[in-house]
Image (tube, rainbow, N blue to C red; front, side, top):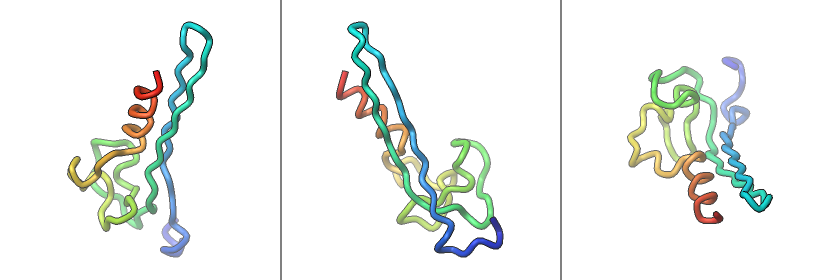
Length: 86
C-alpha cells in the first residue's frame, strides 16, 4: 500500500456482536471506527490493528493514542449497544 494515495487509504474497523437469547431471539449489534491506513506502522502491542489505523480526527495511529484520546472504540460501541438491548 505504499504507493496508494492519501485520499485512497480510508478504512473502517467493524465489530459485530450477536447474542442468541434463551427464547431464541437474536440480537445483532455493530460498532464502527473510521479512519485511514497509516503509511508507516506505529507502536506494536495494545490493539491488533492499532499500529496501522489512524482514526478520523487524529494524526497518529490508535496504539499511540491514550484511552482518553481514543474514546469509544468500535468494540466498545458494539458491547454498549448489546448490553442496552438485553
